[in-house]
Length: 376
Image (cartoon, rainbow, N blue to C red; front, side, top):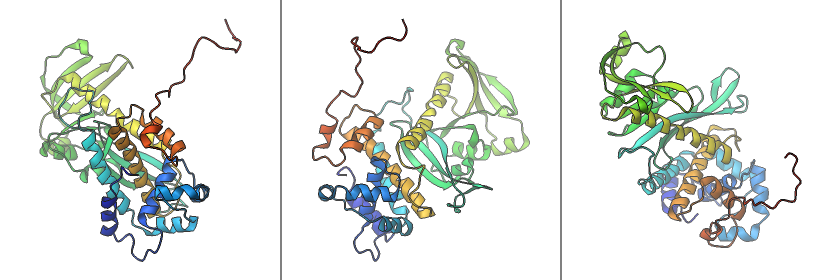
């Protein structure tokens, strides 16, 4: 927890009056309890209470205190979730600075982002605020990932009913950056807004896209690119929403034996780089997979909207904290390995670097085996 900016946290608390009439259980204690739950895979508030009370002698040195389940539930319901959202945003800015020089996988100096969303299913009678379908509730975590280090740059949490493309209206567009988006974000008016902001986009084209070829660029078919064209849209509304020319690249992936068609507004990059940029967009899917598998966001500790968003933002802050620790300590282990080690050594009285000093994290196999062979 020494890697967290304590002063910045209390600026967020004061901004929203988080400790108005609070006597003992502060917002910092709430964050520590929830971070403990994320790092040690606690399933419920009672689980958090039981585990913290099982080691009272060690809590003092961590700056954490045991808490009753009801006290923690009331804090989730009453304290503004924006405290933890602003704090997580500050951690994201810190992590992006640390990972600014990370390799991208594509030979580019520009910032490359990947935008996508992940749906977390909820029970509608228990979470009536999370409207999605007639008998189903859900929340969506819309995330803009900086592909240098896979750090979430912007996170927007909405109900499941909000369509993905609406997030482009609230997304801050960075001039000169490249945005990789899926076909769910196909909206030519919003794409033109990205173009007018001086940014670039790369996306998959839908099969029914109506266009006419203006010019065909020379290409090397050995790279897998089958065509590289400058096109103009034919549809009446599409031509009004996006009056400029677009770049259309058709690429055949020999490994998966799939043909993909991409649309972009960047005309100076090599055509194979356009395909590589979209392939890098898959990192945002890996981020969602990692968060859902290793952090507590599928089961919520409270049913109110404030409690749900508080838990999600603290989970994001925990992920970014692990990324900061990995970079500052120069750890070669993956975030998954770091999280597993922390879950076992969280209250051990030793330097944090000592927990990761051993390199023997791989299962070693040798030729000696006492078990009989089943097959020759």
